[in-house]
Length: 296
Ligand code: MN
Image (cartoon, rainbow, N blue to C red; front, side, top):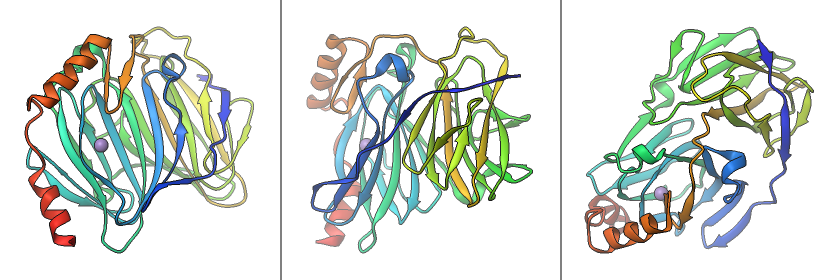
């Protein structure tokens, strides 16, 4: 099984407060569409009232939100709403258009990681949907010294719960002090490791990494759809470690992104704005208005 190596280590800048109650840092910077394909953006947010993301639209992407600490209240204009707690994940497929709100709890900081995953051209206009992958229902693969929580993809014959529009393997990995694991990674996948806690060494060159750093795997040589597996070695130092290992098949398509819309051409972006302003995404989110009314 070919061992994957690390081609790039990205160290994020310090978190910055952008508005009252809104602090964040960008872990995957938008614009590197080819290098990071199919991943678009990863942002770590610390939200506290009056911060949060009130009603806003999306089209053409999936947003995968992992709550690290606190609670995240969400509601969309399809009538869905709920509260996500620590370790819960929401996998939202914006598809052809949705309007939703993401807000912190009243008196607690909501600490989250949100990944924007590109949709292939053929799936940009699918019906919007979301899946809550709750911590209590997590599928775990236990290895010696490591626990892998499987959010999407399949490893060791275990199929993760998330239904995805494009092949993506999203793993939440915890290592005991000194623990070591060889994480199976499809040979055709591009992807990254985000260190959340602890000090680790990753890949065939044992690249060292600390919390907040994003490590990009060597670009896949195996062709699209190749079913073979490689592996990525991860070793923890003398303290427990937590990291995400997220990989997916590159789409190899043109990316045109503007605000909350990510499409394949400028014309499709213009159309997204026309559709949004003419009400084709539907109306505002009733539950979001209830949420903000309840606080005023
Ligand atoms: Mn959103």
